[in-house]
Image (cartoon, rainbow over all chains, first blue to last red; front, side):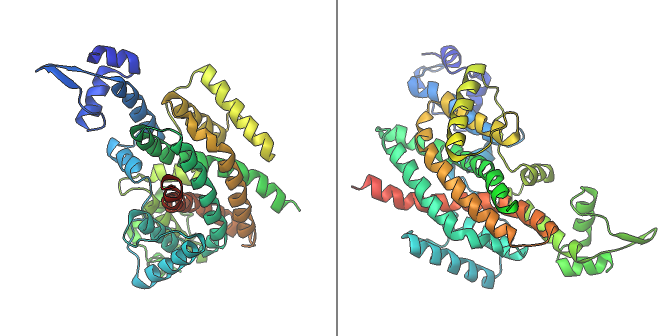
Length: 193
Length: 193
């Protein structure tokens, strides 16, 4: 199909599709002449997907931010941490990971994100949040198991890869919102006895 | 204490503290003369806290964004949803909430965030993510219970309130990072059998 049809099918304006292409968010079509390209079903799905991912951010969030989110999906704490705080944080992370059989690679984005969060908690005097660390870890295992089981059913590798990005980014939002729904209930239980 | 001492104690520069005050992030000190104010222990904690919350965002994230995050803490999907999609999403949310004894208030920020996420998943053809919805909900209950139990031990109402904000915002980051650590393990289990 041509660009005009791609726009109609995906419901995303031509100018927006061209923008996604310039940003590398949408693969180029197959060139049929120097000025014309042909698009396939993949191209119809992708603009809708990109749009959905872009909407997870606030209106002012840049494409770059969202790409970072989709690729890494983790908030990073930017303040420098002392060697001592870092060692303490890594110790806590390794302890919880050992219990759950997780591998820990210091320097990886996920571990550095965790180090940042733990150090931020310590710096502001709210280390008590980590009293719940084992519950967080146990829940992470349960959710990850369900995620991976669901994504595995998608079959084709390309769909699994796309699904992993969607599930990771939108799964964060799902998890954050559900935790707040559950907070109201738990708070009623704990604070009104 | 005076401003200079507050800066020294909190480790946050005077200019930054004044900026937090202008933004309403730090309560004013007690005026001792038209140009001088006195600050207390609350003022020493707060700049460090604000700084830690600001760091959760990317370097470019505005204070406004972070305030929104601390107050609401939820990504909102901005695209309009059709009436039909909205009804479907609310149905799924009410179903899961009923099972867990959660109250659902359509129009509240948390429910609208969920509606947005569910509709985004449907729009991009990744509704399968919701196969794991019950696991997400069960985990949310476990984590919320641990959160509230931990925060309740803080005692004084003001500390509990501050703790709730810190725990909510940094807890999201903790949850997101741990889910990814667990993914690697779950993925190995599911995809290599």
